[in-house]
Length: 112
Length: 116
Image 1 (cartoon, rainbow over the protein chains, first blue to last red):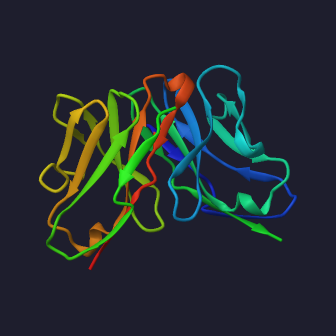
Image 2 (cartoon, rainbow over the protein chains, first blue to last red; image 1 turned 180 degrees about the vertical axis):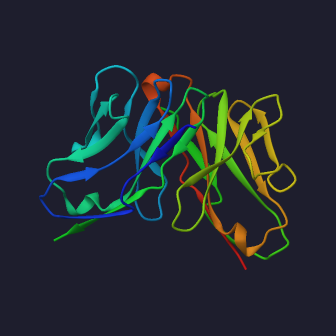
């Protein structure tokens, strides 16, 4: 069955530390992969996407993600966390049927 | 990428009533999607709306409860019918611009619904 898993519903990092948010998927076909961010009381904003080009994808606000087919993963990273990065992050996958399937989300807290 | 205007941004409704949410896109799009985000939860797809055809509903969602209209390529409505407190959620519309490789999926700012 096709699914998206985000490990860790809550992640806390210190300001300036590395941010790592994990996303794994299950699919027999190459998917399209997305990371979205949701700030409090706002809609979803696209951070970055993988669409079968370069496996290392750079997005907005200093975030990047690497598609690893062998690990069926698409983890989101940022070298140095900023207070403004505190938000909910969603990994989403298009399994080739026009729809997006979302992971359960990870709430990122930045410790001053 | 497309720009979506979603209205209302929030509402408080009495149980047993209905609310219609509007989604206006600034460009023509083939597919529009409606999602529900329950408090503290992720997004769940309610239905996919194509212009000129009946909406396709996901498992657990029915047309009588969530009727959808798609009169043209830039507009859609979702109605939440006969509401109960369990319908309190954020409802979001989304579009895929036809060029997933370039634009991804764009989301409206959401409608925060509270049923009392």
